[in-house]
Image 1 (cartoon, rainbow, N blue to C red):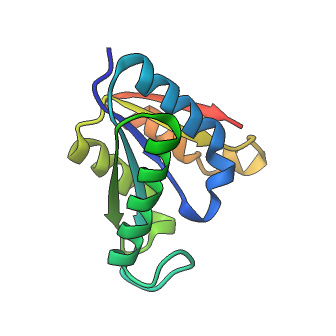
Image 2: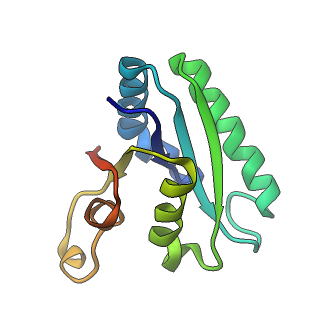
Amino acid sequence: MFKRIMVPVDLAHIERLRSALDCAADLAKLYNVPIYYVGVTSTAPGQVAHNPEEFGQKLGAFAEAEASKHSVETSAHAAIAHDPTTEIDDALMRAIDEIGADLVVMASHIPNVIDHIWPSHGGKLAEHAKCSVMVVRA
């Protein structure tokens, strides 16, 4: 049914994503398809890496560790945004097209009052993406 699964990841908060990561791995095994882990970074030094190259290496190491842990095929895709905080949704939408993903599996947070003002990243992707989006609540 699915051919490529995309999973947005924040390397600074991996443990918050564990439910979505495990769900994506289970689906990848079920359909025998690869997982593409997508991280969004900027060219400026950040909490996770000093530059996009270092970020790409760390994302690649994460993808390799998940492949080993779950026995699935994985790839890493680093998306560059001028300001990841405000451009993350657009960067993820571009990544869907670049990868050719037909399913996005992503973590969500417990909704709160602010979600009535600003939509969640998962909600925005689900509304605008041309592929299926599964939002996994921890």
